[in-house]
Every structure is written in structure tokens, then in C-alpha cells.
Image: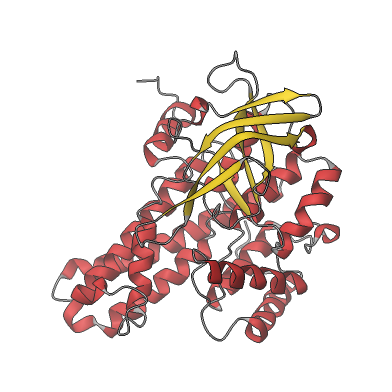
Length: 388
């Protein structure tokens, strides 16, 4: 891995930086877990697409720039440095998009990817069920084939962005005689289809970041399956690899947070240094963010060279989720009693942003597969240890 950027990569960085400086909103958008904020973020996705920045790694004919993973990492660094809005369609562009590239037909790619890049169609993730959280093989939501359609009945829960999203991707049991990871099919479902009921679930901050989705004789064309009938587990594991590996949480997210943490520490050093462990924790957060960045560049270089992401994506997921927790907990320890101010409190300022990040970080060890499950994967698939 060459740690020096080429002239082409440096020119790309300059282009990204110039466009973001000219186009990033001057004022923060409302939370995309509100109806107003969701619409604002959808409009931002459209603005990004006007500059062909919606997802730079996609082919040009599908709305991207044909960039490699190193250029994507450069884009993410500049994106977070600029303070640009969070991506409301991250389930689509970072998870389903790469999966469509791998398993989708040319017709499916042409149908879904361009509208995903523009924010015209925002995607929710439909994996978890009341009895199937981290254990996705326990999925029971059924899709029964009738001619050229599947008829879906059942329930999904903890569906991120589902309150105002347009589509949902998920796994459904298409073979009623099957069990565990057999007989599952990956299906794309429009959330405005007759028979769908969406019920918001409040997060810790009270906003509806999740939803329950109920299916009552929902009819979906067979053409909406991804990867073939009964092949859902294989497709979903690819999606999970993107979720735990490179795409969902780029290193720039944590590097920028670590940079802000250092600034917070320096601004409050007199009080923070009363506890010697605080400065140590700040240093560790910064070093861990840099280590995660270097490891991701190494992985990206390997993928560009024809390699693949395997079970080691589980180590990535554990590392960034626990880094996020430590980083934000350190910030709150520096802020003291001020850390309790919610983001919308009149006197909150930047303080509320830290509390928001801390609350969200609590979910990190749970979503994308609990860290307990990831440790089992590492033990069995990477270390060759027997099942307990």
C-alpha cells in the first residue's frame, strides 16, 4: 500500500473540496428523523447528484463517477471535513447499492440505482423481526409465490428510515418448509404498496428513527427479488459485509469526531486535566481513529487488487462501534453537567451535538449484528475455534 497520494488523487480531492465549499448548506439541516428534516436531506441528496457526488464509486451511466475505493475514501474525508449533512439514504447508497452491483440484473441496476443516487427513492432496511434480531436465520415473515407475484405476510421491526422512506429491502421466507438460513429470499418492496402499515418507533431522543412494518397480503412482483429465489442468505451476507466493513462507517466519520474531541479537550483543559485519565482517553480516541483509517486504506487497496472482504469485517464492526462509544463518553466527561443539554436547548450550542452522538453511539454495538455475534464469527471463522 502506497501511503502517498497520486497527482490524480490530489486533483480529485481539490475538486471535491471546491464543490463542497460552494454547496454545503450554511446552516445545519433539521434532523432527518423529522418529516421536515427528511425532506431537507432528500433535497440535499438531489443537490449532491447534480454534481455527480451521490455515490462516486458507481459507474457514470448509473449516476456515479466510476471512482475506485481510495477516491471514495478521499471523498468521505472531504465530506466530513466540510460539515456536510448526514446521508439520509445511507441504507440505499452504502448497503443496497453495492449489493445491486453484485447481484442485480442490468434492468434492476438501471431501475433503482439512478433514483437512489438522486434521493428520489429513499430506502429502509427490513431485516429484524420480533423473534429475529441478530439471529437473522430465525426470520419468519413469509412471501408466498402466486404466479408472477409474491404475497407477503408478517412483520419487520427496527426498520431504519422506514417512517418516510419509499422502499424497503429485506429477507423473507419463501419456502414454508425451510428452516434457519435456507429458503430465504431477498426482496425489494415499495412501502406505498397496499397492505403495508408503518408504525414509528421513537429513539432515545424521542424522534422516530425506526419503525415497525406490517405486511398484510402485500403483493410484490417476482422481478423484485435480488439474487434468485432461496438465495437470500447469500445476498444478505454480502450486504452485511458492506455494513460491517467499508461502506456504512467510513474512517472520516471518526477522524472528524476525534478532531472535534481534541478541540473540546483543549478548550476545557484546565478542568479536564483534574482527571488524568481524560487526556489519555482523548489521545486514545485520536490514535484509534487514525488506526481505523489506515486499516481501511489497506483493505481498500486489497479490494482494488482483486481481494475480498470476509469474516474480518466483523473486527471492523466491533472496532468502530466501540471507538464511537469511547469517543463520545470522553466528550461528555469533559463537558460535565453541561453534557445533559439536548441539542435543541437554547443554551446547548455545540454541546447538544455531543449528547446526540453519545445517544446514537449506544446503538453501535447492536445494529449491523450485535458485537457478541461478531465475536462468535471471529472465534469460529477466523480463529477456527469450536462452537460453544
